[in-house]
Length: 274
Image 1 (spheres, one colour):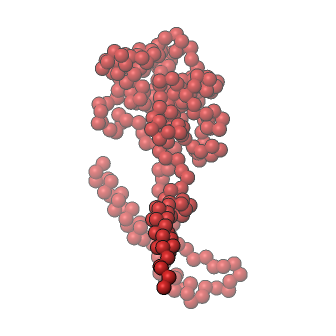
Image 2: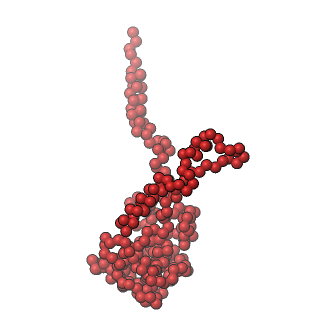
Image 3: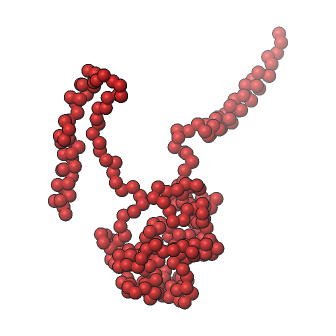
């Protein structure tokens, strides 16, 4: 009688080890097999930096070669968002399209008070609340120097768009509103006929007229409701029985619908609280 071979038990043990070792990879090897949640996309405030811990680089904006539906003053494919002096200088020739009006200065004042005054001060003299909190934070330059006054409107607009040095970008301020900030800075510098109103328009937590308006570029109008209609196919001899049955389900022309009633109720509710 031949002794039992040890080859088979050894093979089984090796196979088991290989199977257990390869099991975790079987769930991750096919990265293309997903439930379509992990798609190529731009995350909010995603950085140009490679490291996920990079919080100093400027965030990304529209993908290359894309154009927002409302248009743009300077596309990312024309001038990058790099916060460098040369990039900001390249926007110096941009012409300010917003005239200096009371409405422009008031809008610029709101954005300036929220985004700029903390470092540059309400007067633009670099005596902001950051410096009052700690003199070591008083590194922001004054906007009232001859050098600052000599900068073009396009340069200041570009500084808001890209940032420079330790100043972050303020591209979250929409392009049209940035020109209002430029006008307000010019008023602080005494370069406009109209005098600026100094200080924040309201206290923290206040709303209404003390804060900037809603976005002018994001979609704000809901999709209109259109009642379905029956249109005969060109060349058809007339409506068939199925179409006639659908006609009976539709309200007659000019008749009120449940959707209209909802709008009337919503309008009455708004009037009650105005």
